[in-house]
Length: 176
Image 1 (tube, rainbow, N blue to C red):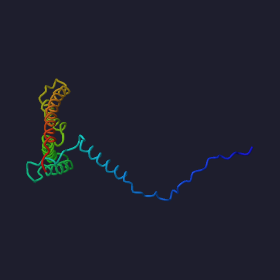
Image 2: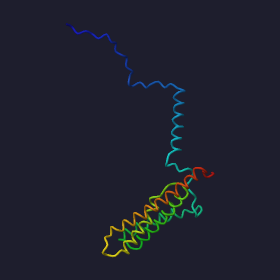
Image 3: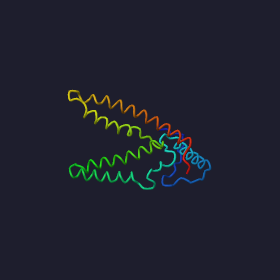
Image 4: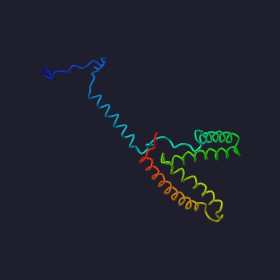
């Protein structure tokens, strides 16, 4: 028996080289505008939203902290290339002071949360003091208990302070 032909008709396929017709659609424009509004709303409600401008520097328009960070970085590189010494230590201290000033200003103004960094800096100092003052018979790991207590206490206090500053900033955004 000869094969039967299917009664289905083949569909006409569009040529792949031909571009689709561009038809202006008011619904497409409305949908695009709606998507833009929805995206802006999500960005406003984002946790990382900074609400306004960065808090002003206590030094006016002079970029003291940024200059300290840059000079500290240069000193760290020079000190490292010279095999350590005072340039390396001074660069680390100078860079650290600049970073602490910027992060503390942003944190206490409710602009960005730098809770972990601000809690870790004094914890490193406590670690140094504990290790230096411990009797040699004690294992050095016991200093971690003191570090954990100091870090947890500072983290809790700093986080609460940031939340209060953030609520004040969001409730009363700074005037432009």
